[in-house]
Amino acid sequence: MADDVLRKFTNDNGDFNHGLTKDIRGMLSLQDMSYLNMGESSLYKANEFSAKHLRLAIKYLEPSLARYVRRSLDHPYHVSLMQYKARHHLSYLQNLPTRNTSIENLALAEFQIKKLQHQREIKEVKRWDPAAAVDSLPSYMISCYKALYTVTNDIAAMVRKEHGLNPITHIKQAWAAFFDGFMIEGKWLYTNQAPTSEDYLRNGIVTSGAPLVFLHLFFLLGHDFTEGNNDRILRIISCTAKIMRLWDDMGSAKDESQAGLDGSCKELYHRENPHGDAEKHMLKMIASEWQDLNRECFSGTNSTLSHTFIRASLNFARMVRVMYSYDDEQRLPILEDYTRMLLF
Image (cartoon, rainbow, N blue to C red; front, side, top):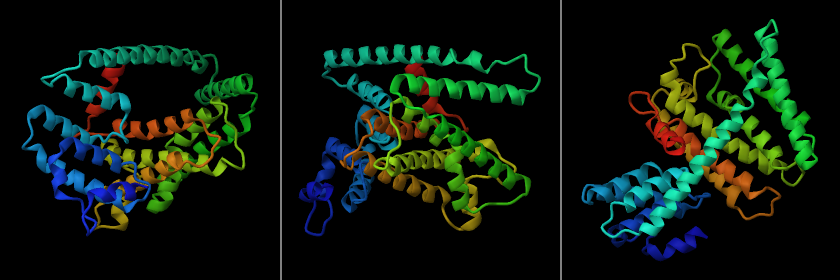
């Protein structure tokens, strides 16, 4: 479908018409559209074409528009959190000579509502803390286990009450897989054994914690595994988990300064490809996972999955980029900015 839509903007050779570069807003739309790629060659070209010419145009644009274009390139709409993008878009609108104050006030009101919602959610999360305080037990391991046991059974009971499902077996299996993953990493570290990057990433998907989080979300939304949705759910979870693991390893491996060989995907890629560009390779892998995630979320096939679950999957993948965007000083300015925007 994308190929058909974009064909009208290309010449006989299939290249985009150079005249399009004069329309900055059109180029921004083309850039945003390219991130909805599910494997279409035209969207690869759209991404390269729009990114190249927008970067060239920045130096000639007036400051507020140049800043907006730069932020749009750094944080494309589809792979970024909507609230974060909306805040920057509002900042741009407020610098225009002609302003729509009604729209601005509506946006500010929505920001305030979201802020209050997040503050309430934090209070709800804090209510779970006492479950982890088992001071009377002699062993910290027992207290951790008891807290985990209590919370897991509370969640299962909540699902059973709300949706008539009993997910306890699935949840226990997910926790077991999670801990097994850390045991594997511990073995690599203890034996000074470097895994292959493929083995590391396969295990890293599990230890990212994303499958565990999404399994809980899946049941809390009232879903259950069926023959029709099982494979699709696992693919969605795998995509988001792999995006998280790759961004984490690319951004925080240096910050964590790990001395052992549990390592990171970036480190292991360097071992296997001494002359390769690990970061470029990992960004390509992330882009590929986004394509697969887009395909699963927007393919239009019949699915029993709710829009809430699909939206949560996309937002999780979007949040990862915010969580692991380290600067040169190994700080997280985007995460700090986003947290201030949401809570304070």
